[in-house]
Amino acid sequence: MAGNSDVVAAPVPNLREPIGIPRHHIVLFSLLLAGLVVAPFVLYPVFLMKVLCFALFAAAFNLLLGYGGLLSFGHAAYFGMASYVSAHAAKIWGLTPELAILSGTLVAAVLGLVFGALAIRRQGIYFAMVTLAFAQMVYFFSLQAPFTGGEDGIQAVPRGHLFGLFDLSRPEPLYFFVLAIFFAGILLIYRIIHSPFGQVLKAIRQNEARAVSLGYHVNRYKLTVFVLSAALSGLAGATKAIVFQLASLTDVYWAMSGEVVLMTLLGGMGTVFGPLVGAAVIVTMQNYLASFGDWVTIIQGAIFVIAVLLFREGIVGVIAKWTKKPL
Image 1 (cartoon, rainbow, N blue to C red):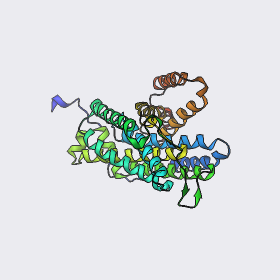
Image 2: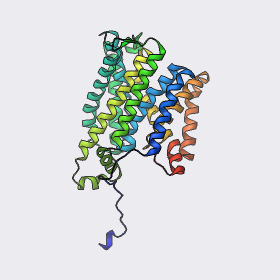
Image 3: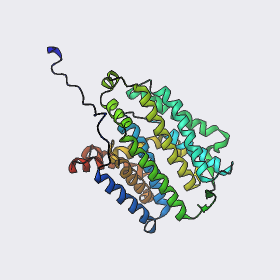
């Protein structure tokens, strides 16, 4: 029709295209793994483990925002609640670290299922506000619940023995345990992104109405990616509790949700390696600029503003644009 001649439908990914691993991705993953294996012999292992935990958290959030197109302001709920459950399971129930982390991850997944089922009924800013409201509910629950320790949190969490064999009180086995969790989580996210399910997510993000017209149950896909993102965020939070032997209100505070958004946007939303770079930059700044006190937040804000103005696609997004290769 003449009245619609200027309307161009947004492109939808080819849902039947062959899905393989590009050679440059194999090279990058190999270099990343090699670098992380060598890193604890050069840098402080606890600092590296913090980077790995937050990198997994950012990658999990990016799965929801960068590929699902859903902006959540409440991901601290899953990260923090998993941290509490993992710490409680290890300290009070006496579970081994792998079972404690699994418990926290499962609780985060269930929480994501409940909150996601309600949140996906809204779109845009309303969706974001609903997720923030749920996260604040979790924060006040964590402040009042007896098992969380209130403002003191859960301290002196035992690291225990992995599978009853490896003593995680030593930094070397603990680091490689965290590295295994991180790499397994990143590879799982990569597989999700490059699966037929991931292709449908991209179609929904780009043109939801057209995806509906093709017969896809959009809300089911949204809920599924929401639960996956929440579970992987919980995996990161549960692991962090074991590493630092602490679960506190900081993990469920709204600022943690804002921090993971910052990591994702700074590194490059909708890229595989962007959130990892963004998390590394933010954690490094927090660690090495700690002597500046409250000025760290101001410095972070300034860097974020500069990055948004100069690198709108994020650090890795700009590199991908220059190299013309998806990263």
